[in-house]
Length: 494
Ligand code: UN1
Image (cartoon, rainbow, N blue to C red; front, side, top):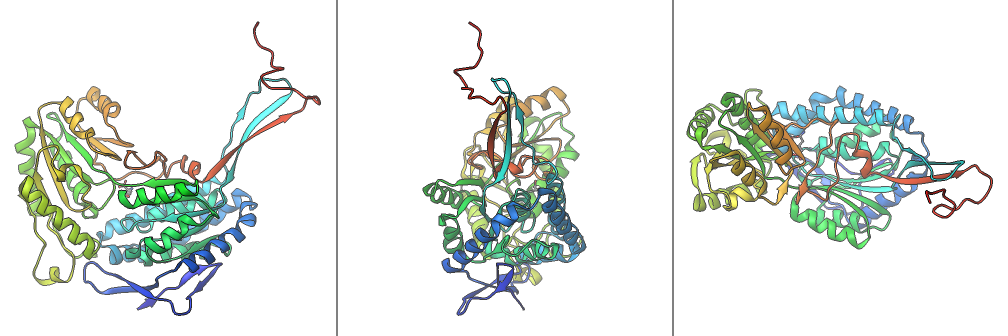
């Protein structure tokens, strides 16, 4: 079994007397690889190394940093098949999605490489003569990136590529369940020529390693993707140090099917949106809101399709859905299914899959509940293959139900009425709205993030990704050769 160390100051290191943990293949429960359970001392060394590397990286011209990112994208492309398999082995999403995870990484690294020749500031008119005003972007310094297991290469790369192009140095902690994917992402950047100390890697628990990263006064920005409770804790801890804390948390994403929708199209969308990645996306379709006129027909079609939806080995290209990612996930999802059995009507699935190869892994049936708006399963993020179905009599009620949850990440409407589609774009309270497409599948050149308890308002990806990782400096250049006082010497109308 592969044994990984920490990666600090450009070297793989294994601290003396290090404790270790292993990642587990959720399809077979076999160990995948072994990692160091990092300590606060390890974080201290990693942050020190990032702080030391910062001045030289900051002063490396951004287009040169972009070249290194481009090399990383090429290296990732070269290794795409192998890394896609690793994603599937460590996390359980089907192989097409494992490869998609890696492709999303490649896309975003390339996109950020180009940003090395932009990183635009603004020129702004002055209120005084012979005075020139502009803004420039400067890196923040050492940033902490803490990432989840559901997109084990893409989400680290959203953070790492954006932080690097802006000139920051990094301490990166991946989710323990997918530490191997995290380690290989770091190797990609190392192979691309990122200088020693610029990207440091510490594995271990959030409670020890994550908290130490957030507490360290040399860390100026924390970028965290994960659950809402952990995110709230990171926010509070970061606030103690008055840090910029970027949070990307949960979702309870609605997909509305109106009475005029193309039902077959909506069906394909729901299957992919709700059961892709076994429902373990922040953007997963976890509620479908059906107009009463199509309710029975649509639900009938959906359950028919699920009868032929192959659940099983995620490395088999014919499989539609693999296992959930871990024993913890399995426990949590099965608990929610119990909650649903009490307060809602189980329409499909609802069991752990058993027998044969299923016994080795964490397999749960695609599950559908017919429920009422306000039930626990209709409001809380489950993060598994469990879909709530809600019946509504009108567009207005569909929007009210869609919006009446604590999250606001993604949303979707299926309709053929162009006016209604535009109204929904206006009305749905979410960071992302899809029309005639499911709630998942965002592209990297657009901002990604949400409102309400989904985060603190920032966005990742897209050209705005650099906002998170730069400080803006305002610059005033007076070429009048005399003291000009703003607000006082400014010519104004009498
Ligand atoms: C996530 O679920 O945390 O839009 C990220 C999507 C993917 C990213 C999901 N491109 O579904």
